[in-house]
Image 1 (cartoon, helix red, strand yellow):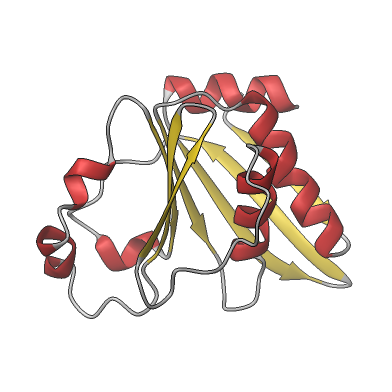
Image 2 (cartoon, rainbow, N blue to C red; image 1 turned 90 degrees about the horizontal axis):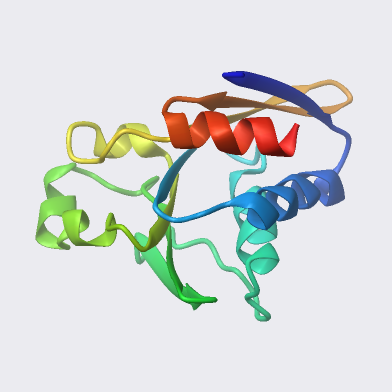
Length: 152
């Protein structure tokens, strides 16, 4: 299976998708989250990160670009590249070091880092579809296909 589309009626359902992913995710894995402003990318990230065991708040790393978490022996990096002016800025922060065999990388606005980010294993695209939202999960690697098959 390479694609799954889910309807999301509210914020709780978006969080639940993140929590469901968390139950089956294994590092290394790279997730791309795309969609318009307010579509639910950070909400989904919050559900995923809290589902992996984080007890505190999950803030959007819009100004810091990355928020790290150490959860159950996995390095989780939540990127928000919305305010990135030039992909070269990622080189200065050592972007390649974040993507390692023990990391789960969640990247919001990945198009802003085009050319410097590794390919995604799973692309999650959130969109507005009245009366709520829709999420399309697209597997782009063997690891992504396995994850998608597990959560279906």
